[in-house]
Length: 501
Length: 102
Image (cartoon, rainbow over all chains, first blue to last red; front, side, top):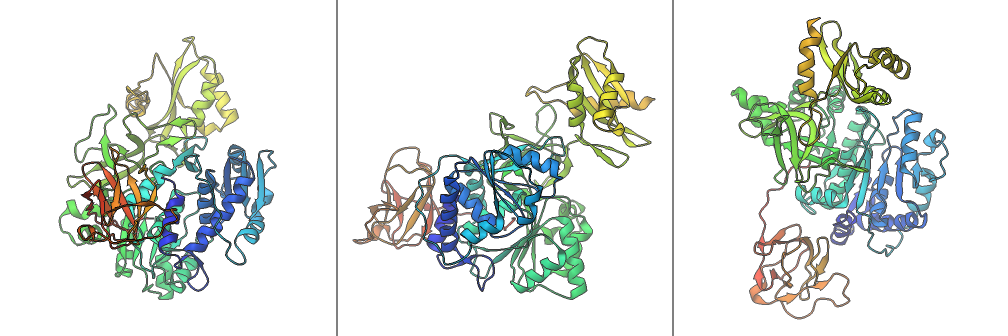
């Protein structure tokens, strides 16, 4: 099943309903599909593999997403917040591509033979203005990749997560009711296009029949003003956004009477913020959603009823569920596993694993999913007796030394450039002075590693704070049966000796 | 007829339209209102009558399943006829809608 089908059946059943933009002058579902089909015809004529996009939120994004699906070209939204050098590395990785970029971002893009750059203003004049075009007839496309999303790169070079049409359509069709929205409903989208929630909002809204209104970029003032003016009924925000929105509501006295549901995710929500939100917006249903790029968005959610029950409860076991992400969706299986792969008991912390049709668990040129379909999220967490999921955060890859986040991957990469290094792992070990200190466990081919030279290389290529303070020479590093380095085992082992001195 | 996931069909006797969500594990005919469905782009419009034995209707947004073959379809447009696979009436799949999360 392909993503354009979601728009196609909605456009056939709700022809005149407004799909994008303001109620007064927005784009109908029929026009949405027709314009996307014309864009698809143009994209195909460029003879490139991918559709890249660099820019602020707006109606061009959903049009390009569906058009790319119709044309059989993966849609690759890029993060405009990256530094120019990092951005251009990603631009090069999209080649051969058509890149539609905001006019004021064009100057940031380095010329690249494989990338045809189109100014967004030119694109919008050509495809988004004037009378609605006819729907173009297109052959069913073959490429089954719908979207490529670059991960944030906190653990090294950004990886391109692959989302196939089958993953995204399965997610939408199992979690959204077809045309389940009434004509009054409108979603305010303020998450950027390069975030999975920005992609899933487009697909869920099209299939559900809900109008989308975009904020070009988030500011709390604009969010509140738009939500009030457009009678927004639904929105998704990340925790920091919600806190600022509540400040603006308090300052302006706006009550957002049309708002029905607010979902939040993408990080841990401080309890005082959600308590304040529930008190200030008593008519709104709050939903906490947990998901990853690699799982096509939401895999667990805490619904409105759960929020109320938890807040009203005297039972500490129930009360603390306000800090959980609720229960897994009925369409996904979820387990907490120990390092050895066995399942954790309720209350026991381990790694969150998921399986389901929406789970891609795949990067370009690298599958990260097990043969039996289970995907290790690299998030730590636990389930309570009632099956509510609590997420602890990313597994301990990141070293926090004196407040600085250090990614072991880039240090390990420098070490691997030494021929004498057969294997290596860089870890953070608790220490009183820095919180954590950087240590390296290495397997040397010669048995006499030149750690001074290695330290010098890291200092030169990275930073002195990233230079290991202690070196452990090992005959081998611990792995599990699926070839995954047991970092936590190693860390616990090293912590004892490292902290002794 | 190849009932591939994502394939679209329309009733030969009423306004119903259907999308295949999960294919059946054995070949067979999808029927609506007692008659075999047509491909969505077939030129013919609905003619004839809905068989009274298959007249419970198709509701937009509802899922219909045939447990025996695993076939699952989505009602994409409403109609008076009801669905069957090889003569076996499809059952409405009861699913509680989830709250919007994105």
